[in-house]
Length: 298
Image (tube, rainbow, N blue to C red; front, side):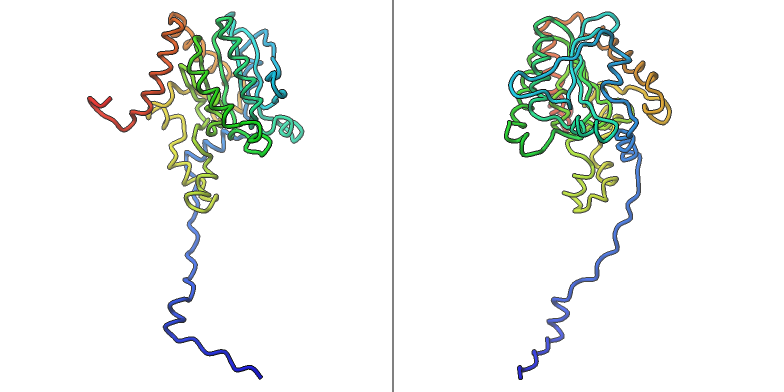
């Protein structure tokens, strides 16, 4: 017969006894996260919806001439108020079949290489470039990593900074991390009123910082990812107004506001030489690094 287990000392019990679990913090929505939810609204207009309403004579181009065509990015030639331009954007789907086809708007390396191929054509034929950003982030799958996801985005950042044509970028929905920035190095960066632009999604940030993705509203407020926040910080150049309740309520009105913003920006940039456009773009992004400098330090 085995001997009974020795009883623990009282101080041992108190020393190693688990603490009573704290009551979970109440998660309260806030204006920042409300805008994130609007940016993800299932009926929100996507890139092709804006192209249909803003550009005429659009001809889509396919393939990166290296691996395949990525349906998560669409791009091609068209006209904006009679001006020949190139337009490129991330495209999400509506129903399940479309979402799978578009990979939920998350591009792979071939998508970014296709975009760069189209932008190189724009530079060759001296056409302004319009990009529409709407992605939760670049696709993080193994196949994308095997084909050089990070390298493809990095090359886009480098080459977009060198193009001698006007580049206009607009966040029309989700502007997630490097996936959005891979099309976002522009002379003018705009955001739709209810879009968001951030280095990380609120859910991922909350999972890392707070160990609880349910704290996404709290993370959204801390990230300063809304259009008013980013305009105040000098990271974007303007906000495109949306119809009451969001762009999903009136596609035509939202598209008209974006069209007016793009035309105004093109008028501002049309007199600049290729070297001046490159310098304007360079100085724009250099100033972002001076966020915490004041006075003569700037």
